[in-house]
Image 1 (cartoon, rainbow, N blue to C red):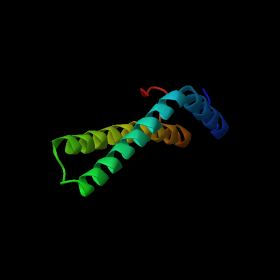
Image 2: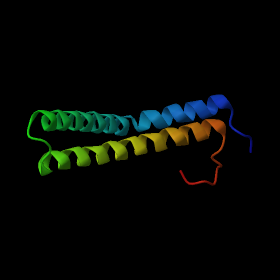
Image 3: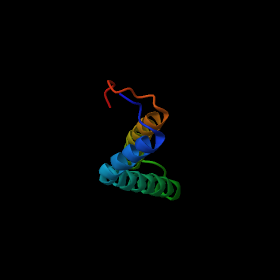
Length: 94
């Protein structure tokens, strides 16, 4: 069995990214929405009487969502780089 060439690996990554394009777009929308909520909550807290429980909950919840989205995206890109580098072996689980 021959090792795949760099071109084969890049083609595989292009297929994978095309397959999960919708997932990346969902994460991008979630991250953008969460960032807007964080910024607007902070601005609201600055110009009103300070942070109340609702504003703090919005900020912390959105921060968690940003963390989750970024972690999933980084995991996907880490796998893609490992494939190009040849680190993933045929028997490893994706």
